[in-house]
Length: 151
Image (spheres, rainbow, N blue to C red):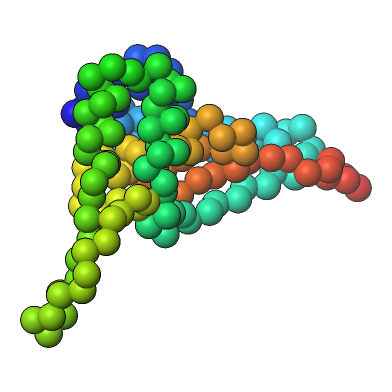
């Protein structure tokens, strides 16, 4: 399911800012960043690079928002229903010292180790205007500040 979805998103150019876990793409973000920095210096601009680690974002991703984003990418019909059924009716229970908590519905976040978790995060973050690059759960934003004064 994840492979088919990723293939669809790639074919429709929805993953252009995403570089992790993609064949032949792992160093492109580094090279684009280096090119941006060198070009900035050549134009006497001060390059700024911001990295944000969003590891904890996996815990708060809303399932409904992810489904809406998929719909905006024209994922529909059986494919959307399959993804929705994967997210809907998830339950959570904690067992500690042989005692179980009450069962709760899970409407946000992804369990660690789920194959679709990282792709879902990428789907949510793709096309965000402030992101120049996305690598698993780290986003990068590049911009230039004022011109550098030369003596």
